[in-house]
Length: 170
Ligand SMILES: Cc1cc2nc3c(=O)[nH]c(=O)nc-3n(C[C@H](O)[C@H](O)[C@H](O)COP(=O)(O)O)c2cc1C
Image (cartoon, rainbow, N blue to C red; front, side, top):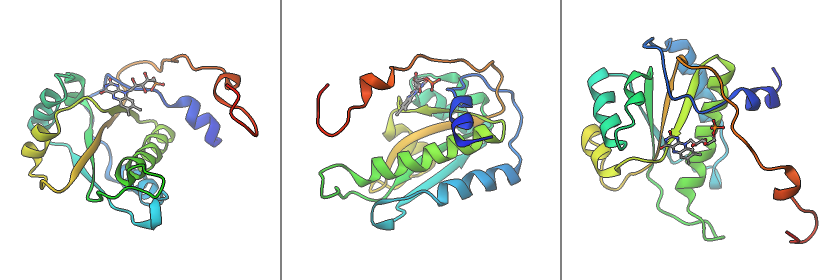
């Protein structure tokens, strides 16, 4: 599969089969995360992989009751201990963790696994469930597992709407 084919294959999977993800697949997926670029190559990302059923249920409740998370093979809790802004003013933590997470999502798609980004959650509740220290930001969650639904296509804008050349003329 080409990278574009994998990008096309990825979709937000919100139903999972209750099947464990093989350790070999998780190893490949986190190798893809490990190789992601980061500001100043700081690599200040940390990933907590939750597979325990009861803990997944608690996190699902802490994610505004998105109970499909409970059935996913794992919930990845993506964190960063970096609080700095880049010189452009944007936060390092959110940008770097997002890049690594999309590496995860695409590698998972190539391996036949579904993922869903989860930004709707109460960080303080997730922090308490997983004993995450106060100084560590919980940037995002991602469910991952064997899909229990069919791939869906969601709409995207045409490239002309989002790209211009040389100067801003939208
Ligand atoms: C940063 C971010 C946060 C998101 N948070 C959630 C979420 O909390 N729950 C959910 O079901 N989907 C969430 N999504 C998935 C988006 O709704 C989805 O990517 C978008 O509708 C496009 O659909 P697709 O991923 O199937 O192409 C999130 C996506 C991103 C990138």
